[in-house]
Image (cartoon, rainbow, N blue to C red; front, side, top):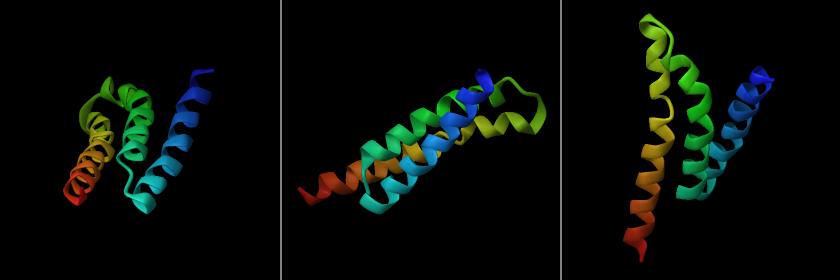
Length: 75
């Protein structure tokens, strides 16, 4: 069951990330980052360099901040 949740979160984060790129939507980037948090917590408990995979959700959150600031500048 845990493996199903792991892969479902990864699979759902990809369309959210693509939607964020296509629409420049901070909400879509945030959803993608949230969906990536759970699988990356698994990697945070690993040893050595694999632990750095837990930084991956920071990318969509950074893009969400960028998109939010870009939308804020248009208003």
